[in-house]
Image (tube, rainbow, N blue to C red; front, side, top):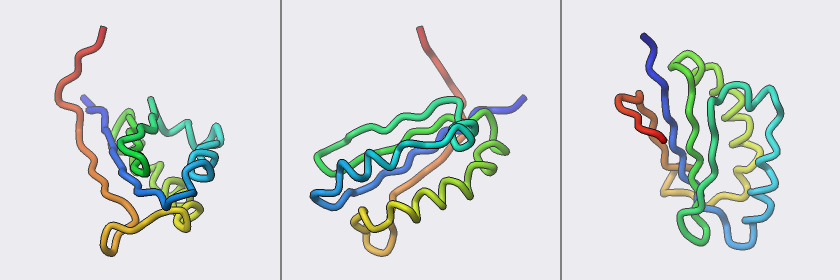
Length: 99
């Protein structure tokens, strides 16, 4: 049995670049094909998190190159966390509840 994989990536957007960052979320159908679901969530004024749900670890790995290409395209809009562009973590779904 294959567990779903969830990925969370937090971005700190440079002041004044929020609209350009959000406009960059016009993903192609090919890019979106990797996700079961995807959300961009505003945490604070300049903090946004991406939450992506993948069918399996293989699907998450398949999406990595496109995800990195997208990150490089918006890199100029981001403030760094010390020496990194993002704060991120991923994990296997071990419990789920929905209506």
